Length: 316
Image 1 (tube, rainbow, N blue to C red):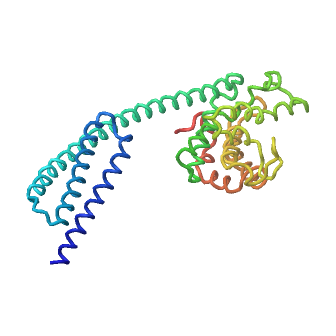
Image 2 (cartoon, rainbow, N blue to C red; image 1 turned 135 degrees about the horizontal axis):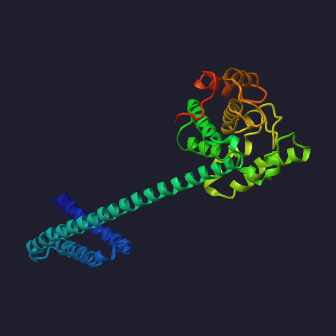
Image 3 (cartoon, rainbow, N blue to C red; image 1 turned 45 degrees about the vertical axis):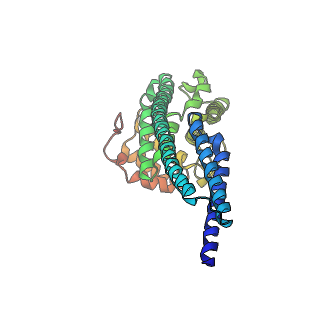
């Protein structure tokens, strides 16, 4: 009997401590509860205080062997305990309902933001294509070059395992590859004869001009590799920085092959279009000097060297 008595007292004391701890945590959490639940939250705190008082009173009566009718205390605690569970369930369901409603609102907001971002990206990409087209208007002989070379670059990048956002940035960079030529005077850019040393220096500055223009636009920074580095050469003899080998970004190494193929396979004022056999032979002979050998190997396995002449447009 003595051991049972101590067991009962221990259980009541443990329950008292649990309720006291729960009341403490409950009061600390009130600042994080939505304002519309404050009244119910306070009511729950009152019930916890009531139970805490009941446990202490029950313990006091039990330990003193008082004749106070414990059945009344037990019945009261049971009754209000059931009501408390009901209240807790109601508050919990109310909170869950608000969470679900907030999540639904967040989904709607996120979907609207996603649509807005897509529209913004489409607007940016249309602007990029417009810049490329504006550059081509300065030189009718390069009409279609920007779109063709961007598509060739994209297909080569895919063949080399590039996917996702990196592929998107490579395509944008290809569309903007000659954006720096906006800083080159028409008298130099459209000159029919040989360029002077000073004119050649101006032309060779266009990758730097592209970097200075695009690096100020956060959205286009990831697309800078091609406009800035597409005239670098595998052996380090390119410009503007004389990068060598894998120092040259992969996007620029891919683009250099695509750009050369398109430039040689179509008519320009300084040369007639070469046959595809001659173009591809030229690219192959420059592997390891002008071009990354691995990129050249991938390019030669694709369809661009088949046929007699290059198409005016590259199928997407």
